[in-house]
Structures are given as C-alpha cells and as structure tokens.
Length: 140
Image (cartoon, rainbow, N blue to C red):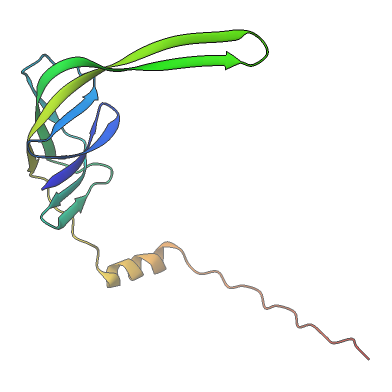
C-alpha cells in the first residue's frame, strides 16, 4: 500500500516505515504529524484518485530529527567584467518516518457510460453548420 501525499508544498510517494526528508516542519522531534492532503491511494492494485485530495484519507508520521542538508554553492559570474559572487546555502530539513496510511474516505465509482453520454448530450446542444458552397470547374 502506498500513497502520494503533499507535504510542505512537495509531493512524495510514501509507504509504511519509509523515512523521508521534507522541508522543515514546525513540529518538535518525537511528535506525531498527520497529513490530510492525500492525492492518490493504492491499496494492492485498487487505486483511488482525489479531486484534488481524497476526503477522509490521511498519512500519519513521526518527526525523527531536524537537520540541515548538504551545502550548495551558488556562483555568479559575468565574463570580461570582473564580477564574481560566491555564496553557499544549506536547506533546513526534517526527517520523518511514515507510521501508517488510513483510507477511511469513500471510494468514488466510475460513472456509467449511459450517464456520461446523457449528460454530454444535454450539456451542449449541437449546432448545425451551414452547407458548404460547391466549387464549379471553370476550365474550358
């Protein structure tokens, strides 16, 4: 069983007992976190899509630690001008472990073909096009 969940503005594919590094969360180390924005849920081949999120589904996680990522060097240069700027950046991260995925949301059934065709016909009436003029051969 896995889920695609949005955590701190990014989407992650998570499953039980998976450790994930996400952008820094405000929760303390050792505390429990619940993410409600589950976009997709796969339960052994039974896929449920959200529009945009699945109602009632959530992912529970535990905050393991707060840390900083690897240093990234930002180097700017303009050639032949003598301009060079060197800067570094370390992203603040939080390591979480996924403890469980709950799927209490009602599963949406696919609409039937007859219902889809009926709504398509009533939604937009067809407009008749004007007949095209016939071309006459003027070669003599």
